[in-house]
Structure formats: C-alpha cells, structure tokens
Length: 137
Image 1 (spheres, rainbow, N blue to C red):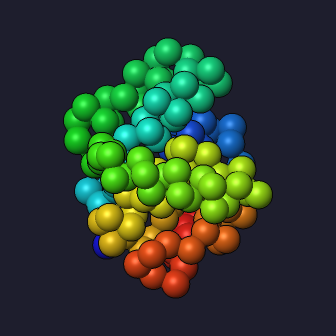
Image 2 (cartoon, rainbow, N blue to C red):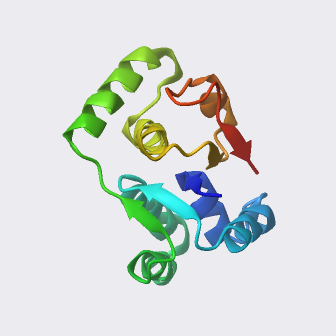
C-alpha cells in the first residue's frame, strides 16, 4: 500500500519531544518502501527540522531523500494548476501550497492513504479519485 506523507509526520518522527513521535516513527518504519512525498514537502520539512533540531537532524532527514527511502514526486504544470484550484476552493481552511501538493500528488498516483497530523484539513478536502482520504496515524 502506497502512503502519501505530509510534513508533520516527518517532523514528529525526527523530534523525540513531539507528542506523537513514537507513532510517527513506527508508521515510517512500518510503511518502509511505500512512502511518497510531494516535492514541496522536502524543503518545508527540512526547514522545520533544522529550525527545531539543528543542521545535523536536517542532514539526517535529507539523507532519507537522497537514499531513496522516500519517493519524492516532482510537480508538473498541471499539478501546479490543480494546487491553485485546491488553494482557491479551500481558502477558508488556509490550505497552502504544500498541503495542496500532497493532495495533487495523491490524486495523480491514486493514493488513498495519507500519513498526516493535519486531520482538520485533510478530513475536509475531497480528492478527485476517492470520496475521502484514509488518514493515519
């Protein structure tokens, strides 16, 4: 089962002080080889990890990317257009570029499960390919 991964899960897995650290770290281990992230998630995650935990932790995260532990999916022009649609449609949520890109990549790849801590937004967003996402943890 392919799982789309949002920033919060990655940051929580990296930060032992986060309340859901153990659950997020286990989720990443359990779904090893099945994890897909939209390219905009990488810089957001790297920035948050560096700002909270320092450059060593940021480098550790980026090693996951360079080692192929996370399947990073770049956005094409049609993906950016879809992000604009989602941002405008869910303006009341404040759905930003990164979250819109997670939805867009999930739609393109027919991913139905998202690993996210942002259940508020992703419970509201209605993807094109399924009625709703299954959200974990």
